[in-house]
Length: 189
Image 1 (cartoon, rainbow, N blue to C red):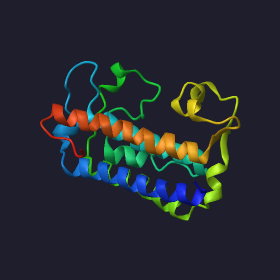
Image 2: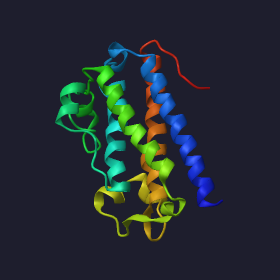
Image 3: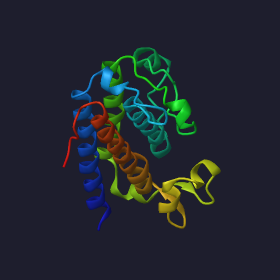
């Protein structure tokens, strides 16, 4: 498959994934998003913020563009734990809550729109560019993406597929499961 065909597929998959996040937000309110089920079960707020904020940070690794998240977004969105939580425990992150769901949706859509715009203008040859060479630093070596990487390291294609697409699907699965705990159904069959 050519890089142009792969890029076209990535663009379509990312649009579809982002549409699931939009649909999820359109059918939930703060009581659903911030629901605390029990110890050890992360709220939907964690999955929503974690993925959007990690996506924002991963975009920087792919493009060199700084993240959108800053003190102003924190003030507006009002997350209770101002951290994506990648290096924190479940016991810490069960406390994640979102204060303003509309502001969060605006942040999320800004992150996702930036990615779609970048993908729309991306030269297909860029998919082969190595963004992290081997040997990987410890924070990368233990990740799923390190298992995917080729001999030279992680490419732009690996980053988009692992950090943006597959990571987003993983957390959408958590969100769909958690929606059942708050009396909502899944969104796909």
